[in-house]
Image (tube, rainbow, N blue to C red; front, side, top):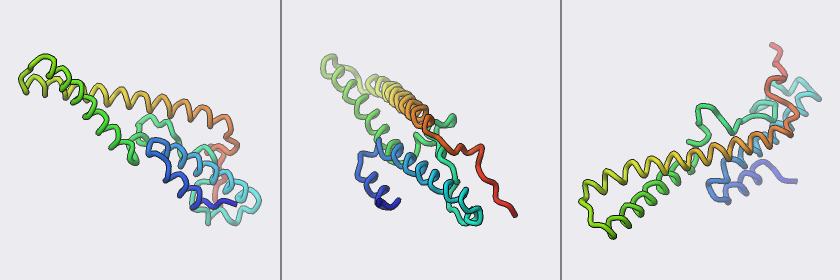
Length: 148
């Protein structure tokens, strides 16, 4: 039997770009278990630490907060700056350009690379969200209400 802490420790050993999605999947599965216990005995509902459903946390958010959490943002920033500098440095070696022109080329290029990575990650999250949503059994909309 694997505890939630053991599963999270295993996920944290993975590369940062995979951690966020797998942690969300683990939390969804834990929500499914919580929902089962809540349906079996409604007296435990006030003591559940998280939502009793398996469609949260969402991966594909319209406001994009999931893509901005964790180490993924830092990796994208470093990737964008490094690739842009490499491209501009390669062009600068081939054709001597003033530093000001090089900087004016590097910054927009880094922004374009940033958005390309962002678009790719969003499409991956959307694909994973649609794949995982096929196995949702306890949607958040049907969540059990706590009686006061």
